[in-house]
Length: 170
Image 1: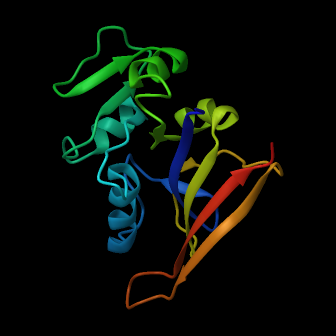
Image 2 (image 1 turned 90 degrees about the vertical axis):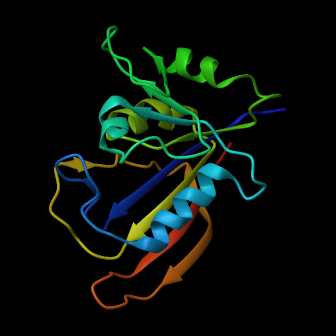
């Protein structure tokens, strides 16, 4: 059994994924989509691997999900978080492919860059607007191709967006 490493990200048209440690937009459907991806359609939660800054940007522990935090700070800890200091240790902490067939990578930019070469799928929300920000998604190379797209029209102050699934050419 091959373990799936799935990057989950939301990105504006100008590649922005964050500003001041938060999302620069509020799209309720994207938050529900994120929950479905990390909880799993089968009701089995996927471990969420994230950087320390991403963890600290959360409103608290997200119910029903494991929070594996990758940080260089060997003294850092937080209640409910499992801590690793490199990507291999974080992936090992998540469990083997038999017990944990899918791991989600949920940010930030440095963690996406580290995990992208090992990723097997990308679940990307493309926000059809540009936003100011200080964090961008690392470039996704030509080895990735779109296998699914679900478009959503703008509604009031909410910009249009698309849920896009990308797979790697192997």
